[in-house]
Amino acid sequence: MFILSNFITAVAQVLSIILNIYMWLIVIRAIASWFTMDPYNPIYQFLIRITEPVLGYIRRVLPIRGSMMDLSPIVAILAIIFLQSFLVQTLFGLAVKLR
Image (tube, rainbow, N blue to C red):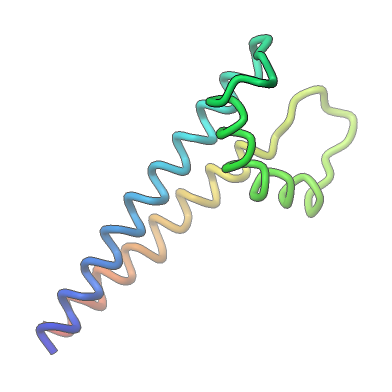
């Protein structure tokens, strides 16, 4: 059981790091959208490629019309915070109970 507990702890830690990195990528993309960016810039293209699947999905599922502001980054960040608070913490709690 100790090995399974360590495995679940490691999965929770990696998942937490991935969610944190993805949240910061969304924040950086949102800030970059305030400025005129060169669409051929490789960093900007990377940000679009890595975040658009999630943000595009949110725009399709929650079409918020009439607003000049794109709210999909806010919804994505709230979803990431939920996953960190629920899923990651649940995995840590499970790992502790297995010890």
